[in-house]
Image (cartoon, rainbow, N blue to C red; front, side):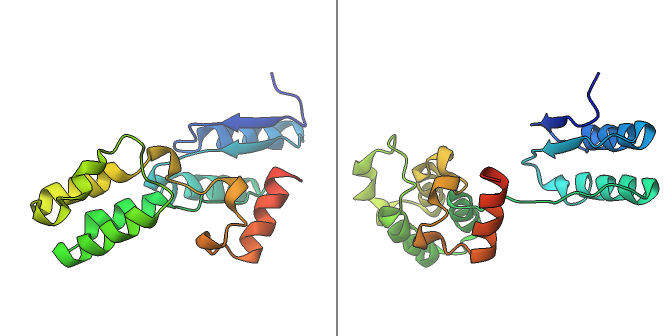
Length: 163
């Protein structure tokens, strides 16, 4: 049983069932429970957010704020997947060599033969260069100028993490 002012955390937000339940419970007993949902799948735009908005609309009470993590290496992987030719992959390779998201597991000897690899092998190497732990920008890096984070986004991050 939750208390009327609890904060409910759901690391697997999915379709928004937890948010739905919290909003309904608040409606039933006049509580002021809050929720934080975390979700990494793209359906958050078409399912989760719409569901929470509909519950708020139907209940005529409640609200929520939606945040997305800022992509870092995830953007790089998207660029690798969408690269149309060898020239684009070569540009991405040059960017990767200067980046902070290289995986320590990458065989650096493969760097020397990049231009002689097939298009598919280049794509695989570039994908493997990324340290999966750096797909998103950490809070500790929001002031790093390399990420070009807006002042408003920095302010929102500080409000969320620091209060």
